[in-house]
Every structure is written in structure tokens, then in C-alpha cells.
Image 1 (cartoon, rainbow, N blue to C red):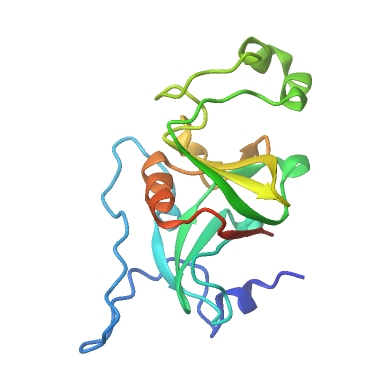
Image 2 (tube, helix red, strand yellow; image 1 turned 180 degrees about the horizontal axis):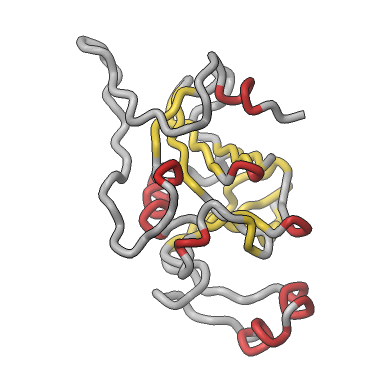
Length: 198
């Protein structure tokens, strides 16, 4: 069972802690994160990228998503993660499980799944043949494709045309991020990296 206290560790809450600079004289440099305000973006401050301390047993390079809190943690190095805000699936559509990064795409094309079209044909049937990548594409600027046992789960960590949805449970199962934030994560995470969604 997931326990937020054991995930974050040492009594540090999952609230924004600010960038954790290396102590004076330390060999470990601070982690650079996007920090500039994004015009028109109205999300709570805690959903901006923040460096936080986490449990020491979490593997550097891995991703952990706490769906109930709308946070994605990229483990940048031992005991240190970059926490990003995300939007997750509606209650009945939340994806959970262990997977890995199977593919990474800049400005990805998008095609709704048959299940999405069946649930809401008015919204999705017109895109049954797909939509090319670009600023109006629902997957936004970057997509990180999640695979299980070498097979595409149809779940993505991706950008969005609705950045103000971050911090909410509104998607068809995918994990949405602000475009600037998913671009940052995209550059950090490697193909094959383990991902766990709680």
C-alpha cells in the first residue's frame, strides 16, 4: 500500500520545498529546474517543478507518479527528485502499475483510442484518423510512451493544450503536464526508464 510519508521520507512533506542547493564545498551541483512564470498559466505554485528529498532506495532515472496528489517525481539522483504537477485520469480511468519508457516523441501525432471514441463520439469520432503533431494537438510538445512487457499501454506522459487542468483528475488515463515542464522531463528521462504509477 502506498504511504506518502514513506515515499517522501524523513518527515519532509510533499509540499514545495524550493530548490535544494548543494552545501558549500560539496561536489554535487544543484539541480537546475524551470522556474520562470509562464504567461496565462493559472496553476497552484506547488505544481511548478520543485526539487524535493525522497527515499534513498528510489532508483535514479526512474519516474513515480502519485495519482491521488497529482504529482510526478523524476528521481534525479539518490534521495533527490524533481517533482512536477500533472493531471491524471478521471476516477474510473486512472492508470496504475509498473511500466517503462518505451518511446519518446517530439510534437507527437495523436489518435483517440476506440474506447475514447465509444465513450464520447461527439468529441473524438472526428479524429478517428488521427491528428498531426503541432500546437493544437492534445499531446502537446512532447510525449513519453509507457510500455509494459514490450507492448504499448496507450498511456502517455505528455504535454497539453489545457495547461490549467494540471492538478485535476480530468484525462482519459494519460498523465498531462504543462508543455514547458514535459519538455524538461523529456530531456532528462531515458528510454527504458522504469515508471511506477500509484
